[in-house]
Figure: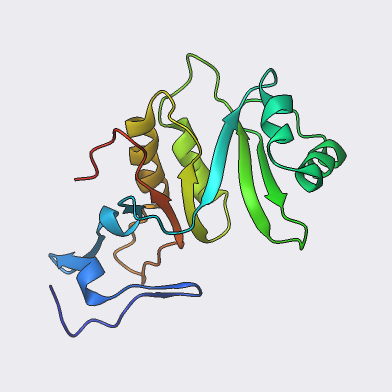
Length: 165
């Protein structure tokens, strides 16, 4: 580790020296700063839905989200994203259309680049959770030896049954 390197700063996330390391002069990001252990910390829930399960999922969310989903035409198509607001306009949850059955198992991990900064967790267990967690980390990975690298402050609580280490 190089203690003389300047910290990497993102508007909503400041990395510390413990969060990164240098190998042959190249910055390496520790995936454990992106994929966090379950902590009880408040998270924004990601709900993976299909057109068949959308209505029941939205019923649990409240009237504001139901009206917003109808107004925006959210239909839970594969990988379609709905950033659901609460009554004050702040983000309250994320709904994403389930990927097609035979699609790439890492595909849900691509959400990491589509979401605003925050701490997220999947609302319920799902198939390919380990692939999704890896895909999330890979989606945020950037390598450019000629520029300062920053990380989007989009963290994921490690899904149940996934070995974080």
